[in-house]
Length: 439
Image: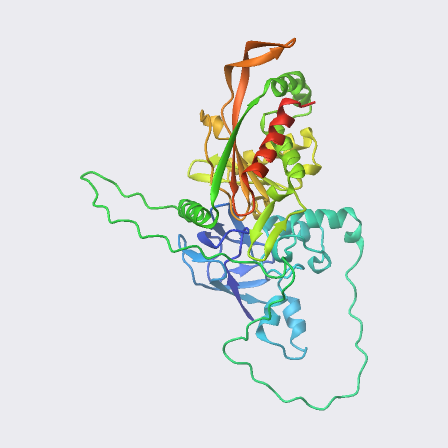
């Protein structure tokens, strides 16, 4: 049977993707979970695995083309046993046949890392409860499933269905060409995600090039970043508050423990300290770890901190999932690993999605402070400026004195629809306090 393959959604705020490279050509065979193409978004470049055993019949989107999520980009032939077994089953709508290749979370996309784990450990994806976006199974879900020992349990055998008296034949209703809209369930913030439609972006003025000018085509990542930034500014009323922090305690702690970390194969940088302080701020002010919707404010239970990493042609934000559960050593390992693989374009889709807050260390390039743009649909982003030694007034033995201290500006840009100034200052003050009183 033929299966239409659509552009997957590689993140909660991703609306389109660019076909970077087809790894298979029409007529070539496909194995389940085998890389089929590369897709580029503003968040990640990743290989997309085949959802079937079979062949690639048709390519509908060429390399370099950008299309919305859900666009049919290829047609596949599914020759898997699951499809053969379905031949003898009662007839069902076409969408049900396609669902046989979906993962347990009900989402048609399975990231490469999840696909590899499932294949390597011979798991039944339908037995794994997905906690990702739209019920998608994540890497953490698979690891949790295996750690609980559920992986050793064989998939349940289908039980014969008792024969019931044959009911009176029902009238056959032919489906219309246009499916009826799904009913909307109200009363729950999770039941009805709100898709905000920002105002149309004004057309850019026509610019006559000067003699000798060169027009550089936009890469898929640069175009996606541009559209995401414009959409964010149109969605959220951005406000930025700034505080100054003394990093003397952090620097002393790092100098004292840097060698211990190196003996364990981990380079201790400043980023894990800022992540830990951010986690403390999110715990103290939960509304910062939230998303605004037209039905209310969605408070996130998970604390997933994204960290912006500069790469030659743009910016990417890998996510430290469950950052509140990691020690300083654990954060250091994860930060270093994600940053390295971000720069070498080896992140997976799971590692750039489901962020609930973002930090950006613009100080690495010498910037003192900035007003960063919110990474939608989050409600805030923390900017970290360059660390500089400056003269400051301090109190020593009850008397004021001037001392040289390593100082840093922290800027917190927040969504004013759900966070007010006093609340934002409370969050930033908590981050500042955690850094200055680190123990």
